[in-house]
Image 1 (cartoon, one colour):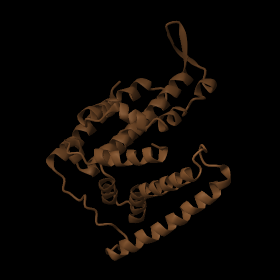
Image 2 (cartoon, helix red, strand yellow; image 1 turned 90 degrees about the vertical axis):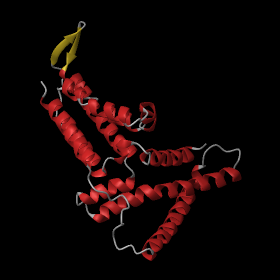
Image 3 (tube, helix red, strand yellow; image 1 turned 45 degrees about the vertical axis):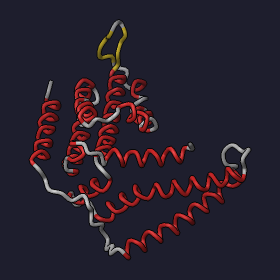
Image 4 (tube, one colour; image 1 turned 135 degrees about the vertical axis):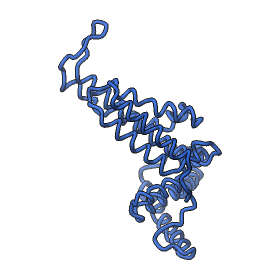
Length: 256
């Protein structure tokens, strides 16, 4: 299976996970979005030297992974490209901040090392929190929550269409790669001489498909905003879920 096919399978699999009949998936999308934003805000609010405080915030992703019945190994596999990039944040801090602050096992630990680790953990937690939101909430529900927060309809529509139709672009690119491989069976990869023509053909096909999609939207009564099917009312368990996490975040933040 090619990398394009793998990417398509991952998109479809994430949609299936978000649509599971699991209690966490049925929590109101606005509640989960607010909790995610609150978690990231509280996490990044810690001092760059408060490594212990940031590590405490790991309670949220651990609990959601357990109660959401999500695979931590699968999450690492899907985030294997993003996490190393996030870990590069602050990698040069040990070279600029060499002030010693503690000694562990005869090894002097500098403030730069602590700040580097703190920034890494903040980035990793933020990425995992975003992943957990996507894994427990469909894109339609997330967009509906954004509209409840009065995010402009143009931005929300762009997010929804970009997510939904990236699969069409990948399918078209996969067909082009299969056609190319059939015409050059003994060649590994795509020869650089045809890069321009392949990209140009993909762009033209994307424009044609976009026009077809837009015409279909107009025929179905599109007037600038989608009638999201994810609308729902707040329930008692939604408010309880929100209140419990707010209390936990507050306690973890003020804990000394």
